[in-house]
Image 1 (cartoon, rainbow, N blue to C red):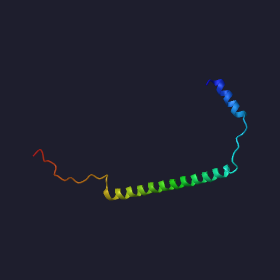
Image 2: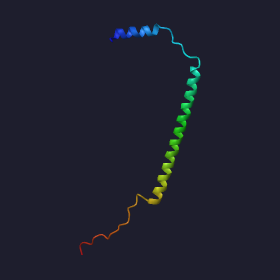
Image 3: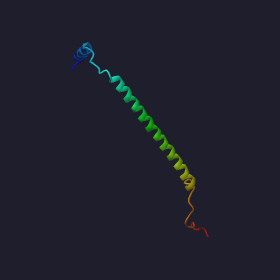
Image 4: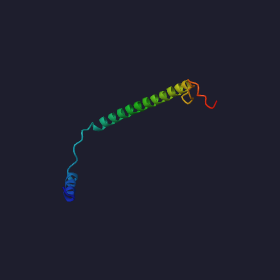
Length: 82
C-alpha cells in the first residue's frame, strides 16, 4: 500500500460517521481506572514495606555478624628468619 492509498483510506475512515458508543462506557472506564489505581497503590505500598523490612533485616544481620571485620586466624603464621 503506497502513501496515496493510505491517505485515501484514512480520509474514508475520517469521513464516516462516529461509531455508536454504549452510554455506560464512561462509568465502567472510571470504575476500572479507580480499581487499577487502588491496586497499583497497594502493590507499591507492599513493595516499600518489603524493601524497608529487608533493609532492617540486613542492618540487624550486619550489626550481629560484623561482615566488615576480618575473622580471627585459625592457624599460627609461619615463623621465618630464625
